[in-house]
Length: 190
Ligand SMILES: C[S@@+](CC[C@H](N)C(=O)[O-])C[C@H]1O[C@@H](n2cnc3c(N)ncnc32)[C@H](O)[C@@H]1O
Image (cartoon, rainbow, N blue to C red; front, side, top):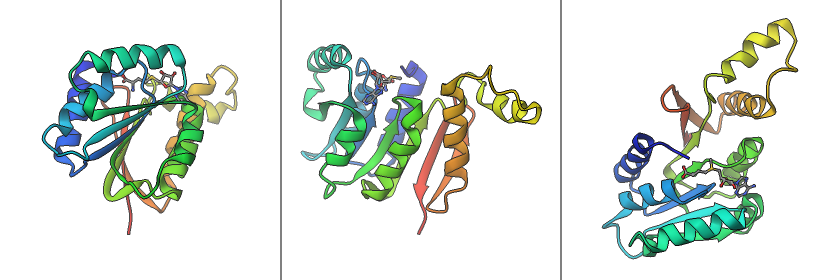
């Protein structure tokens, strides 16, 4: 779950962007969805955070939190595996900000589906969380030199692969901010 400062940062990004639609991959208790919904206030009837969660217990907790927040009209929860949900989302609707914060092994898949299905608006940004994972991601590069990657967790390896993958992807421009747990901002190239 994002910290309160990161929540304020997400709200700020939504306010700065022209987004009326925000897509979140990974709801948990709904905290970051609520922060981003705060940033959508005053953006009209179309304004919505669509947030995806596969775990029914977290989904129920998030639903309760969102309903009691007074921001329920700005948030739509979708239960299910995010890959399936993304593949079935109406792609005539584009999102101005897409926050990737679910299972790290699927970050590359989420990124590719978002771009291939054209879910990101032309002036939109993708925000990917935990890309430095407690500073451990840098260990992958160091350990590669000694060739002993067995002690590195799969989460950390997945995030390293994601960082390398997007850095080599000519479809987008990215900036990795070494704040919070590492956060990358990504926009489309033309
Ligand atoms: C780090 S938490 C999200 C935290 C939330 N964004 C926040 O800051 O308040 C990640 C969430 O993604 C969900 N998740 C993991 N894999 C998923 C998948 N394949 N599809 C949908 N949700 C998934 C987990 O159940 C968990 O609730």
